[in-house]
Amino acid sequence: MTAKHINTLLFVLYALTVVATLTILSWHADFSVDDMFITFRYADHFLKGEGLVWNTGERVEGYSSLLMVLMLSGLHWLGVGYVVAAKLLGILGFAGLIAGAHLYWRKTYKQGSYVFVSLIGSILIAVNYPLIVWAMGGLETDIFTALVCVAVVLLLLQDKSKHADRLCIVAGAIFGIAMLARPEAPLFAVISAIYVLFAKKKKNPSGALLLLAPFVLIAAAHIAWRYGYYGEFLPNTYYAKLSGEMTGEHLLKGLRYIWEFMKAPPYMLVYLLAVVPFMLKKSKHRRENLYLFAMIALYLLYVVYAGGDWMKGARLIVPVIPLMVMLLLNVTVQHMDTPASHSLLAGMAVLLLCFAQKSYYYTAPMAKYPYYWDRIAEYIRTDWKSDSLIAINMAGQIPYLTPKQRYIDMLGINDRHIAKQQVVFASGKGNIGHYKGDGKYVLSRKPDYIIMRDGFTSDISPEGVTFVSEKEIAASPEFKRLYRRKTVSLRLPDTAPIPEKTFKFKYLERVAARK
Image 1 (cartoon, helix red, strand yellow):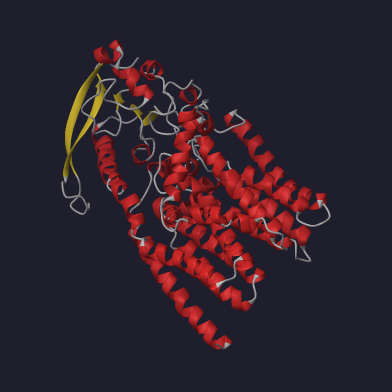
Image 2 (cartoon, rainbow, N blue to C red; image 1 turned 135 degrees about the vertical axis):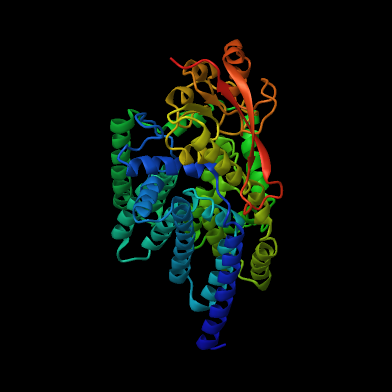
């Protein structure tokens, strides 16, 4: 086959992959996570000159990504809506991580191998359901993944480059920017520094220092700014989600989370475990492969330690999926260069394409809630007085759409007091990261309204509600004396893709006025 034929074949196959990817992305166009609206509320206050706050005048760092807040603010200032901007950034991250992987393959493999590797790799990344789901989810997941992927690729290439020092500096800076996106960045930066130190036969401490210097500089500047602005060295989200427990049940949740990903097509973790013996063989690429494997393994241990995640779609595993693909292709081409192994990888790609529709089932159940919450927010704007104090669990869409109201985040993500409470639930109960609360504190602030659970709950007994704050509120005599139940029928717009257009919104209204 001539080079012209190869290029034509590649173009056709890549075009088909792009079509498949765009089709799958379109399935998730309506997918959004309530947490993304928390970021929108911070960005909105920032653009209004009120600072990076959730409630005006209350400095609490309840967002998970400063980078996302700043990028969304910039795009919105240019006239782009927040939802569109968030999805554009997710798609940009998705494209960036594919580009990063291709850069590595282009520089590492000769043309014959590159045709196979780039094609299979493109499919394994481009139609991988967690990457696509979270490209459209409105969070920082794919942006962070792209930053990590590009930094890792630069370090994999620096060993063979005349500009190794420059690549180390750039990679370190990218890891620093990644820390503004997600708090897990230091794990990747430290492992990478160790790799650079031992990547060559002779130790390279200067390269490791060149990598760490920009990372530490950016991280230190961020932490110093955080302390000066919020008065904390760590974000409020860290305290809110810290369980403080390391029970077997907690770790078992993390292992189950990994298992759910492991048993989903295309079974990359299964294949990864199968090729470990080949990866350990002596070869000129062994250090590179061990570097990739170390990041994957240690990051997955961190996921287990964290207890997994309450969100569907393997969100926490996304940052290492491109690294898994790169490692699998490396080991297959370098150590198992046989028709059988190539067929196995091709089979994985076909499995992904065949089971691509499965990703829809992760997001479809969640796609209806934004329509309900949008209608609830409209009701609050028109029927509740401005500057009401509202206690709520859903700290995203409803507060964002009702900017004239003030809120108490009963889960503690945006509340300093609740975030620093002790864990009340055992770690095996409730949603991961939502183990804290303080019903007495919530009632002491005398909220005008309380929205239990998701606003649809009839049973507001301690047994009928889910989270700590609302359980303690439901058991309080003060609550029963000062609040009354209210139910209103609301209608969704005719354009909402939900058969039953009428639903009941249930909340609690304070009887006695606040003083």
